[in-house]
Length: 283
Image 1: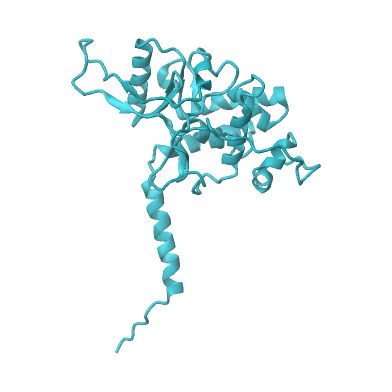
Image 2: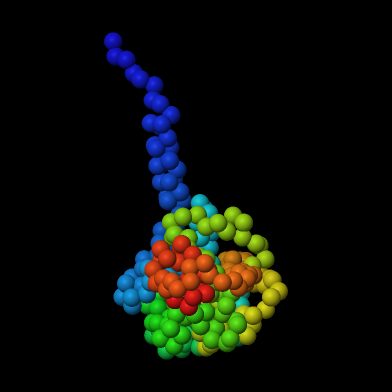
């Protein structure tokens, strides 16, 4: 007679945990992995600290995946201060064309939300602007310029957002906070993020439009349906797109003397260990 042992709880637990992790991973869209791969490649190519550009992309274009993880979304468009997540590259490109037809010129696109008005020579075409790798590489090069100018990665991130003193401060802290959370872990804010948060704007003095500084909540924008072949409206009804969650109401921590005086960490591990202290030390 064959005797079957009843599996112990300890034996079953790893299987359950593995199954939960696999189901969470499968719940995420493959599109969300595009920005992760693009920013990682740009970091390696340009020697940007591991995960730093990726953290910025999550602040710029992040949206919540079904499992609650915040991931940068490559088909993100911010028009006149209101952010939109689209289902595909083609849909995002069509939206940009419609926004242009509506007279909106300040438009940010892609993983890193590069502003097309302020950077007209960044890409040779709209299709190229939405290419995750080209988008991340251009943003990474701009971040390097800011680093050369400021001498610090945190300050470079602030300058990417705005080179006007004081404006980029909260963005800098939000990036450092996001950087301290590994890409594959659930963000502490994923479930508790305030609904009235505004979208993050792209960086640089040339990248920030004045309308991005409004503190009021943006209302959803009714985007016109794509035009038909004859120039008229297509049969599909208009779609409602809501602003994505951003860094508008992130409060900068109160200034205090860092506990790790004298340290000048330049690695992801050092920032995770004491992100505020490292940032205040100027890296």
